[in-house]
Amino acid sequence: MPSRIPYVPLPRLHRPRGTRTFSYHLDCVSAAGAINSKTGHLLKNECQVSRRNFPRPSRCGHSSTRAAMVVSQRTRRAWSATTTIVLVLVSFVASGARAHGKGSFAIAVKKQARAVPGTGRRLLSKADAIPIHAYGDRLGNGYGQGHEFSLTITLAGGQEFDLIMDTGSPITYLPCLGCSPELCGYHEHQYYDWRMSTDFRVLNASTSAADAAFCDAMPVVHEVGEVSNVSGVCFFEIGYLDGSEGGGYMVEDVVTVGDELSPAKMTFGCGGIKEADGSFDRQDGMAGFSRGNTAFHTQLAKAGVIDAHVFGFCSEGSGTDTAMLSLGRYNFGHNLAPLSYTRILGDDDLAVRTMSWKLGDTTIAGSSNVVTVLDSGTTLVYLPSVMFQDFMTQLTAQVTANHSEVEVVVDEDTQERCFISETTVLTASVVREWFPKLTITYDPDIKLTLPAENYLYSHPVIPHTYCVGIEESEDETILLGQQTLRNTFVEYDLENDRVGLVVAQCENLRKKFAPDTPHNRWRFVAIVFILMFTACVIGGVSLFLYVKFGSRKPFKYQVFDVDLLDAEIEMGDVTNT
Image 1 (cartoon, rainbow, N blue to C red):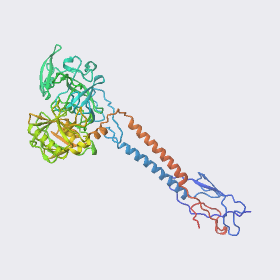
Image 2: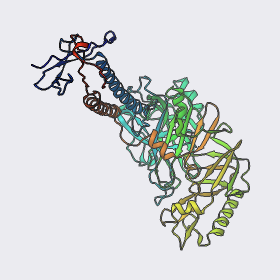
Image 3: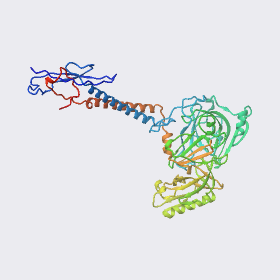
Image 4: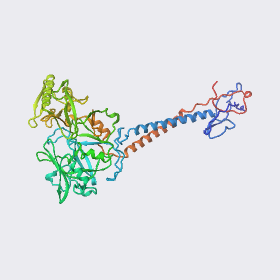
C-alpha cells in the first residue's frame, strides 16, 4: 500500500482585514508506483486542485494565503488599469468640448437655445461664434455683386433673414410686410410678417420719451412723421459710398442671432436698400456694425446678451464664400495667436491709423500716417491718389522685372488692371510665389504681412487672370474692404476703444468654432457613450485574459521525509530544490 504523503506546516501569512481570498483545496490521490520507496520522492502528481471559498484549509491541504493575495492584487491592478484607460478616454473627449459649447475634438457640437423669445432668460453662453456667408465665392462676379457677407437673424415664427454684415453702417433694417416692392425690392426671403410677433411695435416719438430720445440720437438722417394715420413715427435715410440708398421707419421686436445667445429686444428699421442703378441686393437688408446706439452689437451689449461690447470678424481667403463673426469676448484659446491692439480714431467710424504700406521691400509713397476705415461691407480697397499711383507702379515693376512673360492688361468693363501670362498658367500657387507680399504697419508698430491674394482677385470671366482689387479714391483716407481683410482676425473692442489684429487661418477657426453643419445636441453624449462602452469591453476582455492565463504560477511540489514532517501540509510557495 502506498505510503502516506508527508506534509510540512508553513508559516501563516497575515491577511488584510476585509480582503476576501480564495483557497485552493488539494485532493491528493496516490497511484501505485507513484512514490519511490527508497527515496520517498513523489514521482507522479495526481493531485487535483479545485478553487473553493474555504475560510480555512482542509485536512489534506489548503492554498497559500500569499498566492491568493498575489492573485487578488493582480486582479485589482488589472481593474485599476482598465479604469484608468476609461477615464483617460473620457477626459480626452470631454476636454474637446469648449466652455462655449463648440466641439474642439473633431466634433461639431453646438448647444441648443432653450430660452423662449422675450423671457430674457440667460442661456448657456454670453459669447458665440457664427458662420456668415457671401453669395458666390469670388470677390467680383458676373452679376455685378460684391463680396459682402450675410448674417442670418431669426424673428417671430422662425422667419429668417440674411443681412449684410457692414461695419460701415450704423443701422439695421430689413423689408417688412406693408412695404412696397418699389422701395423694399425683391430679395432672398419674403418680407417680415410682423403679425406673427406679440412683441412687435412701431417706435412712437409722440407718446414715448424713450422712443423720442432714441430717434434723436440716431447717427443717420431721421425725422418724425406719420405713416398709416399714425403720427410720431421715426423715419430714417442713409446713403453709401457706392451710390446706394436705404430708408424706412424704426420698430422694435425680439431678435435671435446664433444658437447660444439669448433672444433680445432690438430696435431696427422696416425698410429697404436700393442700388444706384435702381436694382436690389439679393440679401434681405443690412446689419449695422458701425458705431452708435443703433448698432447691432451695441444693442446686444446693452441688453446683456453678450458679455462685453466686443465683436470679431474673420474673412476667409480667395475662392471661399464663408467668414466668421464672433459676438462677445469669445475665447479661441491657443487656436488664435495673441492680438496686437491699435486705438480707434474719432467717434463715428471704425477707423485706425496706418503708419506705412510696403510692397516687398519698397515703401509705398503717401502711406505714412493715414486714417484707415475698416469696412466689412465694402468689397475692394480705396487708396488716396498718390498712394494708389505709387502702389500700381511698384507692383508692375516688381512683377515684370522678375517675370517678363507677365503682361498687364486693362479690363474694358471695370477699367481695372489685370495680370495675365501667355506662357505660364497663373494658378494661385504661382501668384503666391511671383507676386510680392504686402506689409501693412498700424499704429504704434503692428505689422501684418499679407500674401498677394490680399490685393489681387481672380477675374470673374477669364480664367487664370488676376486683377488688382484696389482703386483710387479722392479722399485722403484709406477705405479697407474685404480684399485686404482676408485671413485677418479683427476684434473690435468698443469697451476699450481699440481694435485687435492678427493674421489667421480664418477657415480653420470657423470650422472648429463655428461649424456650418447641422448640429445635434446629443451627438457629443452619444460619442462619449460609445467610447466608454468600447473601452469597457476592451478592458473587460483584457482583464479576463490576464486573470485566466497571466496571473497564476504553476505549483511546485516536494516530498519530505516522513520522520521530519508534521501531520499536515500547507501547499503554498514551496521553493523548488
